Image (tube, rainbow over all chains, first blue to last red; front, top):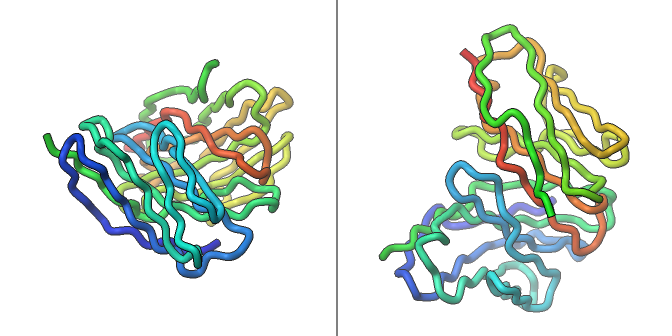
Length: 112
Length: 115
């Protein structure tokens, strides 16, 4: 599984967009990029995933570079409830497994 | 629909004892994975089950074991508990194993404290 690199922490003002970067320079052609977040003392929550096209859902947008070596998770209007650790994960598909390899993630602190 | 249910939520055990944790996946989900989370090691994959078969195993000693029942409910067991086994144990369920567009849904976890 490809490794990911994320900044350990970031701050964001409430109401502003939060842009969380992730580097996955060794990603393979059959690996998806997934984002999860974990609010303190809760189980991780799925946010979004993508292969090579940009993706958007009700929670966030995922921008993947053309070479797929990095991606950015965008929370368009951050709120205090978005304060959490955000994990960027790459995962093989079609391998009969849902195993997730979590890195250290980015602690996003949304400031009032 | 109901989410992933883990029981118990909190547990205190003594060194040397054994413990069994339970996970009920989302209805219809057949893949269940277990993870251990500690402040020092972060979130680490323990093992994964699909249709009662272990599909994948992480790098943990044999004291950690699991199983899955025909109704997809899963249990994990830790024998001869050590202080270092104190952690949040998380269970995740997915619709299928390795399928496209398959995300994992996590439970709230079981907080195990070994004293």
